[in-house]
Length: 184
Image (cartoon, rainbow, N blue to C red; front, side, top):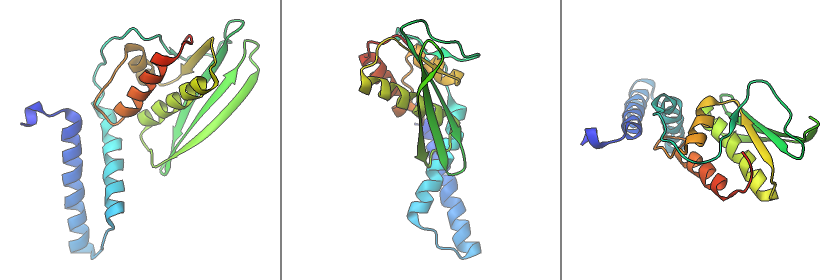
């Protein structure tokens, strides 16, 4: 049975068992009464923390690429460039996007917060999702998206649909990208 289970599901089981054991010890030896919501949040954060270790190599896809950034280069004349990124803290993450024209001037900058997201991989995925959702909502064309997470960039380029903590967000990104008529 375990051999047919994905590594992500095994990770969830191990984290759940560890959380139950740790909570039992806290009740027994520290005389605490943990709240069920607190236990669920601790379990979720632990799964997020360790799931980044489970990144398999993704399959190839025909989706247009998202360019990994090294040095910022202005987009060609008539294009917009959206740079995305994320930062993680103990309480959550922040994602941001900056839109610039071919002259390099900033046209728009947006920052968003995601409470409870402490996984850097998931934070970068959310930053990408926020950017392409913004592009889709404004019907922009001639857009280049750049990000600095090589893992996220490669997974989107290759059309990954994995069974990990970032899987649902990644599938959402791929779905949005498949409906856009922009150059990425």
